[in-house]
Image 1 (cartoon, rainbow, N blue to C red):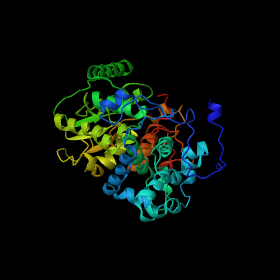
Image 2: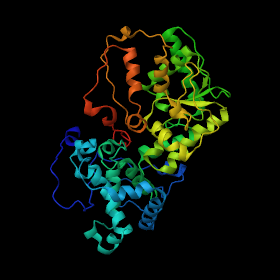
Image 3: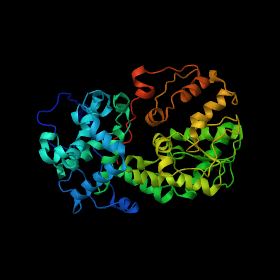
Image 4: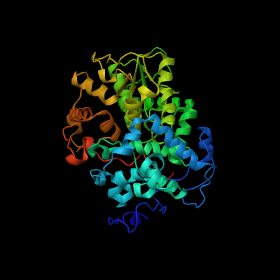
Length: 444
């Protein structure tokens, strides 16, 4: 199986790219969403189906639903219409997508992937397309096109590396999000997104961990800190009136290696005497809604701010999670804001005002920690890490969506003496995606 996937043929296939026929090759697509999870989220057309089946059981009127969805989004998002109109196929993005580099499939070139949706826009929403059809670059909306959308828009991870190189600043991730939202509207979702989103909606986190189990996990981590250091710590849960609400992704308290990050959080907060609380309700910082639709993104993000209001905290401190921070930094203020019931974040240790978080009232753990180190509030001995040779892989969303480039490096250089950068074309804004966002790295 791995050998088959590694057989990359960069030669363009013979035939017209407008042919929507797709061969669903194992390992290159995700499984359809579990109907039970779809129902939890009140999404349309729950049913048992898989992409490799001939009959996708599309709902009656599916074509009208999709066209109405496109029309609605063109009216709602100026950026969507702009991105549909301004691409000149210059090729700057073609070799920037890791899925194209790894597959050799031209339809994974960002501009051509967007063309799969753009051609439908031209056919039905431009005068030239309505009159001249294929001569104006338009295509008919068929079931084969729906399958093509599913196959290729779920091979995009929304990493936005291509957007860095686009001279027009076209955000391909936004096009992917809208395509997936359209697919959601007729029940063509993937389980890798819908199951964790449904879990989060029901229990507060992607893994479906219930409040009592969350409490046990946090208390177990506190016990492990004591075993490792001999220092007993208390981790407040659902405490009203704390200064800071700390929100982390569920991976941090569930599995390795993320679990060691949780231990680091807890030791850091104990060391500086931070007045904080965690929450069994807002027990997830991550947001799988970002990989599905704007509406689901909004619904899942809302719980963080609802809990901040209920617990009467002053501001929010967040752990590391790429999709968590793209949502908080770029979408939260218009989706769930304004967060004017919170205060602009101020470090209780250094007095630093995080002006960049004045709108969302949320600070990334790297910003917070780098500030502590800059003001020499932590005693560190980097020589204890001399056995390690360390590098840093920029996370797509914090790097490209937040500009969080220097703080992680500053922390690493303060805690070790063997830090080395990777090649320049693979770091900072040009970082390659880890491969999440599409679900193809899972066995779901």
